[in-house]
Length: 346
Image 1 (cartoon, rainbow, N blue to C red):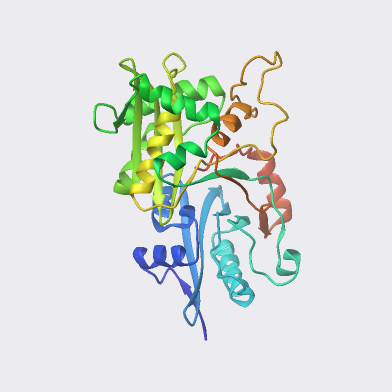
Image 2: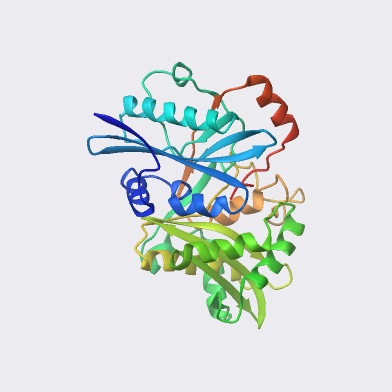
């Protein structure tokens, strides 16, 4: 017996079902609640069959009288449950049409269990990834093993920060969101990427409470770098980071990540997601002069790639984006009016 439901689960039951299905943090109840404060409508559909549950948290952004739908790192469907997946997508379509969506894109966390080709089930090829198409996930081992799996230069930088007395400070222990946002503005100007409002980051830390981490690295009594991470089930995720060009020496950013990994491990997490590297390995991480490591600016992620892959772990690639298209002409018009930036919806 299959039962179609619209948000019948409590927040605790929803998150329990997401975790039981191996689902991602972006399908968690609180992520939907958090995004609803910043202009997104939220629909939650669940389908149950016996003891199996399939879920989809759909975010909607209004574009005048219409909207566009987005399922970040979802839906969550049990392995091999093609019939359940089909039923769930019927509810996704109903919700999308009720919201007057021109299209809904799915950025799945892994392969979806549909029998046959996706196009046979009403999908078309979607746009480029909203969230990063690849990431690095670090197994959370003991300290010695964490250091051992790092590249030599990364391990040296972590230990250098320890020797030079770089101090790690929790949010509220002398620094706060105002300090993080000041660093973030500097970083976005330097590296050419967009950021959210100050309130966005404040609300994030408040919404996720003890499941969120906000820490800073202080070098020579100067604020060097800041980091916000979150944990959900067995995984912690590096969500936002910022640094000072003038004071980020002595390996401060490297030690900051190491401390976030230790926090996640002590909280019971099994892995740490460094959240985004280029879709393709760069041919080189050096500048054109070839004598130093390239930075990170705009679409040039060479410095970011070198930094994150230096911690070891596994490179994980996400499937191509899929789309449920309800108005092909309208979809084209909206896309011409809206230019997405990679990762802009985190």
